[in-house]
Length: 340
Image (cartoon, rainbow, N blue to C red; front, side, top):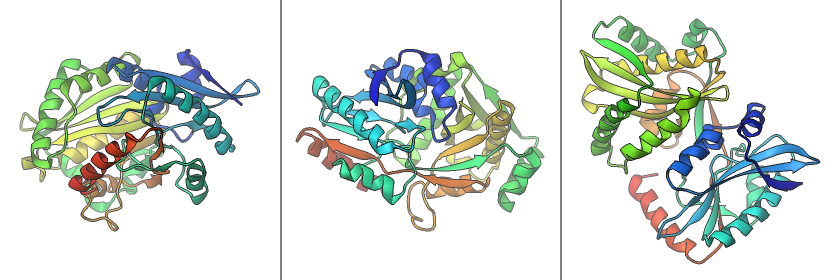
């Protein structure tokens, strides 16, 4: 096996088309988005006998508390020899971390959470992160079925609320590809931040992300209007046969209006039109095990549409320098503060 950089979008995206376990965080356009934020990126491919068997988009994140290399939801691999893939990739990442003067390597694997896969990282001297960067569990829905069959798989209450919203002339769902509408979405986002008290993404962040995926028609914003006022929105990415419910906002004072249910259903239908097979609702937290978790409410909403959970190996850190521990303390404090 050997590691090579990949600079051809067709090779990169073509390989990912053949993989089942993947998210847009390893897409070519996510790399372009990261570059637009000023982050350095590398697109590594692991080859065996000249055959591409794994890819890993790798991104630098630099901060005063500690800088690191991040492999988000990767590496994506087709081979069963995962240990060999991660070992040879890790040699490359260690070399890169030294060159870039970084403090640790962080990998958010897109591998099933099994004792075997967890042991693999432990054997390579990784440790569990203090705070995950991207979802480690996701709620997904097979949307290859006919629309009425998908409806049949929903929770009764969810079905009822969708139909109630469809019959309500005061509710309207619109889809937008206009970058100027990012400002409208951001305004809703900031209103939610006031109530839920989390660190918001910036308007520039949303605009750059939208701009990275728009040329390939891989992104759209859905707005829900009630009596002419925009009260909810979702930010959807359509990529490689999958759709992702990436960002969302709902004005708290309108939470009893079922607009968000119809908005979600319209996004699912759009994903089907685009030929997507899976709708990924993104982050998940078991509401029975962790009823007070901040994601518990959104998870119950997502589960109402039917589907299944996928749990991945938790985010892993490899310590490079002592400065890592400053980052560990800060992230531990943030995790406790957020109730995660």
